[in-house]
Image 1 (cartoon, rainbow, N blue to C red):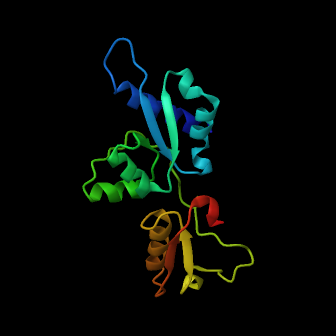
Image 2 (tube, rainbow, N blue to C red):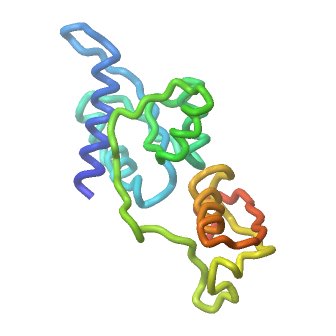
Image 3 (tube, helix red, strand yellow):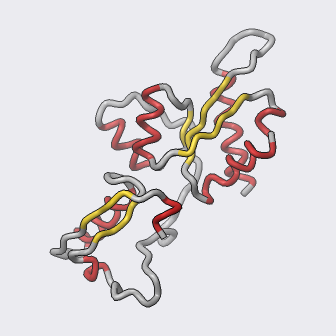
Length: 171
């Protein structure tokens, strides 16, 4: 957990240092967008423990629903930094959004994520999703795009519907 916290602090420090050129740094307010997931625990922990304040940073952590929402908030100026997934950033940039990645926060290798169901679910394979509705935190993001790519990769002719549900309520 130490590496993500360090990356969070470095990213916020870089943004704060870019805000002024005076020899005597003035405190700058920064709002960081974060999803309500364990991946962001170091950021929430640092905020709750007052680590940002100790470093002279005025940081507000705003819970966001997903990568596309975070990108919109960045572009609107409502948040100054977002810990986002690559898919959301790539989609926004391909649509002309002037976003820049300043640090890679995490890297998931093969097999570190998946489509999950309960053990007693009638869904035991990807094909069993045909005609079903799947919850995802934001449509047009990692959840539904991953499933659609897996369906295409396996050559399946099935139809899946998607509904947006906030992370705490998905399970």
